Image (cartoon, rainbow, N blue to C red; front, side, top):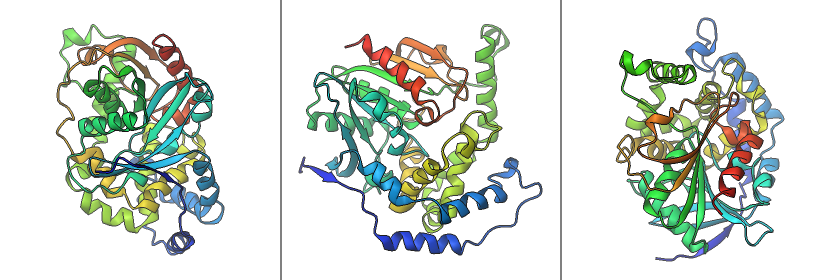
Length: 373
């Protein structure tokens, strides 16, 4: 099988953008449910206003130019096309760093941190298999372990023998797995938003040993399991059925993604486009829309359960974890599977750290890897 790496440039045909505009103009809107609030999902009034901005003011060509400002490539690994950005530092001795996004994010998550990291790191930023320009998938079985093996192969093809890994959301599961499949090559693992889901209810004697911050995180985790699991239930059991609506309706795709940005940005009481730039929110949704990968992204992210939830082997690789205000990681539940040498709690920011708090995230990454070079 070819190991060729091919230069790539995003060039969406104008006909696709014209089709999008037509669909937006002819959206069939549902009636607002009583109250039209976030309690029942994305409010019609809020999404209508965002879609009007999308239709009349947002420029995909501007977004395309921002993405194309960085070197992009594709290669085939384990039968799957993998798209990635590869930005080398001016410092030849810089540390190679592999960044992995999550759902419902994309490689666009890292646009704001690239300029902040390239003074010290050579950056490799792949799209997860089935996501965006790495999609759709051609085979099943793309769990975190298979993805991690693909990432190790990618770094090998790029000539990076030793490297660091970083990620959030799905990237927070894939990054430690890269260290497990290639422990002799990964110098360090940096994670934002580590996930912990203990068995509830927690016994009273154990509950008494947690700090107030940890109790808050556990309470929010329990509330998440009780109130917000609908999207996982659908994407992990019926991704194909869901895909018909999302791939056919740009407003459906946008609404599905915006629901999570409202729930997972911080503070939750503020609408997402007042926390994250609305042009970026639309660019992120556009990557899913233009590539038609709502189904394959759901399938890879949530339908492949061969490694999710299982006890994982500790790779022994030094690991740093940063927990922003929205996220709910509790250290004691993570120590068996990770060699945690750095833990940072931050009282602001949400799940999309690279977009919400880029300077804080980058500062933590640099301090961690400075001690590992």
